[in-house]
Image: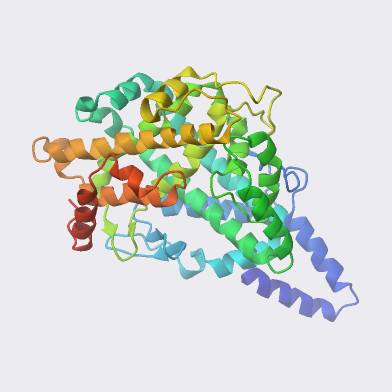
Length: 441
């Protein structure tokens, strides 16, 4: 809004001078809000770690977004993501920071005006800075997986070791914090895309409808080579696939995550291990907002996106520029650890990855591992409640159940019925009732 008022003031002043007002304003916009050298054109994957001109206004706008994302993810920020309102709301509680002013709130009106001002290329520059922050946080997660892969394999197969080995996870607060920050970054990115969809819907409605139909008809898990160019163009118009975020996957190519398939394979294990973190002791669920006051529920938003990206990276061979390397798309999956565990979970045969149904079933089994391990972790904690006070008695198990249920609402490949296979239905209902009455532990 300040930018809009400033531009109107400039236009008024320039009317008094013998200048082409339209050309002057257009030159200003292209100079300050575009960086065609560092940011590739629409339709290409958003680059990471680019050297944006720090004198340009678009760089400062992107820096503001990354700063506010980190502040929101910090406990006690006073801003909470509301899933029902789809924006961050002020939920100031006792001891919360008062650094955030009304002007710093993220809302649909502000986002739409920003997108109108900076255009698609400006949004891509801001998104590049946000995804760079995401990549930094994701590095700590993958490092923990790589350093503790033996423990995580044991954690998945031997539930009796959950409480005995909980100290290993509790000491690693960085995974909890990183996943929360990634969730906040992705939610802000979603708000930018929603603003683009709203902004360009008036003039490009037919194009958006065509892109939406095309993206929904593609199975991005089984045919990433066909979907990638189209999905990147659709993402730049604010259209996203309901199944997977292939544009995000393409942006993460430069991190070389696909070089270590086991790290990709163990993400559901480390995600479930978050439920034994001591960070939950300081969490507080807000029933009116259906959210945690310190945004612990944003971890589930992060996991939905990361599971899809990690699975695609494990099944395909993408080059750093986001294009598929030359390979036989009818070849069988060569990662035996994926195939073996998928067969154990869902009885899926080792079929060719070009068949969409087989790939989707394999991905569903991949996500179900997270629900199975998480549910078993919560059940073991409940069983030992009162016996091992150091690890269980102070955790808000009832609200933690709400967090796991929230994941099934977000993830398109699983449902609440999937969760009920591993977690009793009556406990989900009773926990929701207790939380609404203020009993979280």
